[in-house]
Length: 325
Image (cartoon, rainbow, N blue to C red; front, side, top):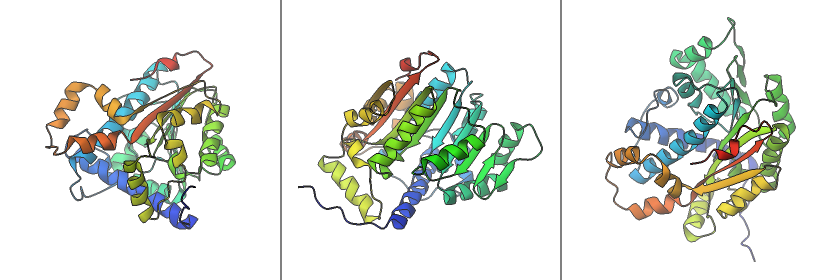
């Protein structure tokens, strides 16, 4: 018989999920300060580098950032940037600014997160010229559409919405010129796992129904039924953070099936240890020289408990199924 799950108040749980946004940003800020990758914009969301993070955490974030960017950039090149990107649960992510610097901007870049997270991000954008200037440079009129929980420009839009309320999400995105006929990449990083299986299935199904030509990239936990996975779950639960969707994280197969059951034509998944081994090895060698790693076994365990799953639909026959590592 399954162990009874301790009850966690939904408001407390939502607050704990919002706090994971800060955790990820602080970890990315530290790793980029150590030169694992370049991110000149993250400093405007997190001022101090903060306390030292363990080398295996830094390498884990390196694999996450490089792995997700690999698929995102491949999609942008395949569509020649004639597409849109929707980052679901974007937090304080800086991808839009990176893509502008690299001349890889989609036609429009959308971000969605809890309204409180979005309000913070909008405040940062408004008060930090290095963040606001790229938005203004890519906008055709003098004024941006701005309120407490949304900011809209020609090429970038951020919306406060709860992903568990699909009709509200759909309505808000369409209000800000989302075009369902454009090739669309949807991205979620450690987002679906905090929703119940039926709620995350609704998101994935809505995406399949809405966009005939699309790719969905999902980064999150995997292999969660073993001892290491159980310890991860217990650690998060102690912080009032409930992995409500953990049953989809049992294996790479369950990750793939979530997409295949909800209208996606093709789906693939790799654990992050495999992704790490497939990244450009000259750069992997460079980052491995940055810090001494005492226990490689711990890094392997960590990377084997995260995955990237991607799924495609290709009405326009662009060859999206060829995008991989």
